[in-house]
Length: 541
Image (cartoon, rainbow, N blue to C red; front, side, top):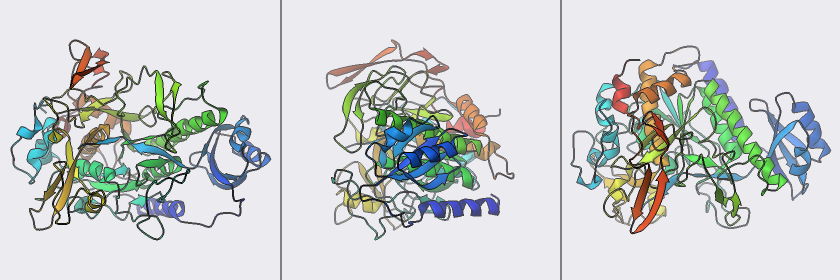
């Protein structure tokens, strides 16, 4: 159990971060900025802010940045010239989820997931080809995870009342670090109308569904309902940093990671990327000085937050991305800046530009495979970037397209109704949505694919390892992240590059080629291998 004083202090900090406090009087055109300073440059940065006409409203000492209000049109460029300042970013929505919606033993490959038959376990376990691929269906009987292990889901929220999540949902520790925004900076629809007067959703709500799907894959309980997760006995903590629309705030991501470290979370899953820059470049000649400062702020701020959490025992898991790109050899970025919508342009980039947090230091990044075991067609890859692989689904992995080749996991009923995926009679409107009423109360599930769906499989395996080898202590029940990473790699099932290495994907006559580099122990398609829950539940280091 975690020390009460430590948790209470963290909860107090979170309350301060999430509270709606009156803003200082500022001009109508004022904007809020995050100004990151050097390790010993806080005083100099404050002076630079004031000289540039800004007002410091709060100092964040844990991660080394200032929250500033300024109405100056060139405030960022002006303050960014000071040597004590390492990055400047406007505090606005700047991210999006990495998921894709869809209309032990060695890792097992399955030609067609639709051929699966029901097996022992929860009612929909027969549809969980992903769990059988990594041996989780057997691992559940040997090590379902310990209740002391906390897995934080930094995402769009968790439906804590879902019948197949509620038993493992830790409402007390869950926090929401975002406020819904009906419109974006251009006045276009973003999150839509607020569901509650404060526009700040309760901690047990997910109006998008992405976070709920991720959480369910990690730790849906074995309870005779629906499906089972990789580690069905650990606790889930909603640490929300994403908008209903799937975009993220930089500051919300910083707050989420800081909070995870403060309360003793053991693993966090980050199935999203922080942008508006899909690739963040410190000194790209095609970017303006203001844009460079923003990207430096994202790289620096997120690395500080990740380091803060990891130093406090948090294992960091991230989706690799769905751009079908060799992240070691990127050439162009046509998706940035991705917010507000419509601002993207084509720019040349190189390997110095980073996808954050997937390419940040200390993060375990996860590529995606389909039911046959091949790298999913959409999954990013790279010999330096892919640490492990996991089932994330691929509707095109086989003859024709089949939704059952995606990953089935829990979905919030209200989100499905809002999107028109459920009829007035409660019946799903398509094969991508499944209803289970096995115990009288109906629960809903959805097929999705993406590296967003692969990452939580790795997070669940990490939770199994922490359950087995973690120790209680003054910092709570924990296992050093470096050890978790080592064991995760040692228990993964090695998969060599395909032969030939230039793998050709043929989709209805249109061909695309991805080249796999590396060796069987570590390569660009599979990293150290496909995560293996059964091996994690049984191996001896």
